[in-house]
Image (cartoon, protein in one colour):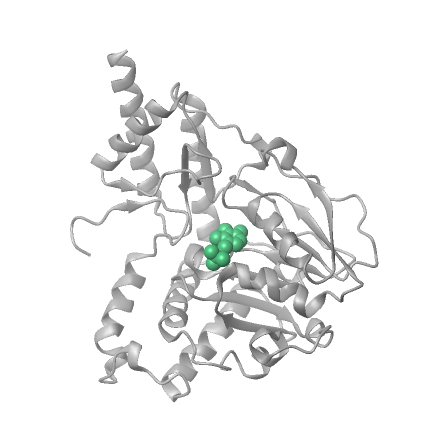
Length: 362
Ligand SMILES: *Cc1c(COP(=O)(O)O)cnc(C)c1O
């Protein structure tokens, strides 16, 4: 990679490991000495078949899933999943439960309301999502499913684990998939857009238990039907070949490091940054301590002027992607798997320098 590569703390599309970028870029010129660019590969040819199969097998292996799960690569981002889930699994006169922990979780419930009853079991909206809503003490048995978002990318909160539930659990894991060990198989289905922890924008990983696929509520066109996608091994239409390949490279990178090591690093990265936010007199976090996300660290300053000054200060140090979401403001530093500890150490030292300069000038 050339010398001017920036440290990119963006929430998504997010930084990818340099090894993945290198290998993906070589494949654009000549994929595996085939004499073809990855961009030219037939999606029904043997080379892509191998990529598709290995990527799906690796997801199962890394998430500890058995053969009762189907792994799909779909298009249309997280939002299409918000729509497909109720289309497939929520009958018109049925109800689904939602844990309203932030913008994406809320959106998923709104989409579901087009197809059946979307019931919010717990919400922290009135606190602007600065803490996690409580996990419901009891979940009505008659819900078709319960939907929740493991990590709230915009607000910077994260559930500590994936609980067992008495109704099928469906989880949006877009911003923390494969960032830690967790009980993936407690979910009847989980999904994650690729552009945060596992690749490039344009594809979404879906893992769904086969028993759910036997329970689809409507006749749907194949492109909207999970069972049809599963039967076609995600090859109903022209696959997003480059996207799946980039995810395969990232999954291989994760496997080589090991989830244990990744989790330990992610814990250290988050602790380092939160400790600095607590210590530094310029910055503060409004997010409840126990609920803070290890993936998206949100924080603010006293006012917009300081925000702007800090953004410029970081930019001079080649640090980018730290703006908070437009709904929240100030700063959000995303610490996905591809962010090395050294990048966080750099961030912390820049925060310390800024504090020093700022206090001197005042
Ligand atoms: C980014 C994100 C999404 C939305 O993904 P799109 O591909 O832009 O639709 C959904 N859920 C969560 C938790 C996210 O972080």
